[in-house]
Length: 224
Image (cartoon, rainbow, N blue to C red):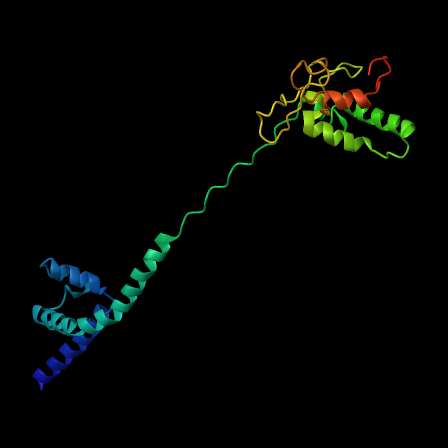
């Protein structure tokens, strides 16, 4: 009877210890066994050696089942880890490029056009309205031509009467530049400085022969 009671107490104690060992990570026991050392569990220190041996044996018997439960979790964590590492870092935003400031004369002019050029374009519209009422040309059209052909006379580089401070001359029309016609001299080089071939002249790039046909005195100084 006494032996039977002792066995029962041992069995109850053993079950209690097994329940607690279920809280111990399997990795700790496995690591200890791999290193050849018995795992040291504080709450087992008061048990007898035979009871510890029995608990260790039962833990060994249940280890495969616990390992099977842990393995899917470990595999899931291993599969999730590469995805987190593969996430690309957010690219750095490119710095905002500031718009370069316009030259002073353009910045101060209406619609970004130098004031001296605006005055000349509008004056041409007024003269045409009187001399050729049916023409209907607006000064903004002339301004568009001046912008493309000479950037408004090199950004308005003219005196207060509209005379250019630096001549605006196109390429020599001798056939060397692709896309340009060959035009022999028509003014003896008087306007374009070339007695062999013509060159377009002025802010709106008239050819000498065309200018001589349609020239006008824009500022009233007696010179076309």
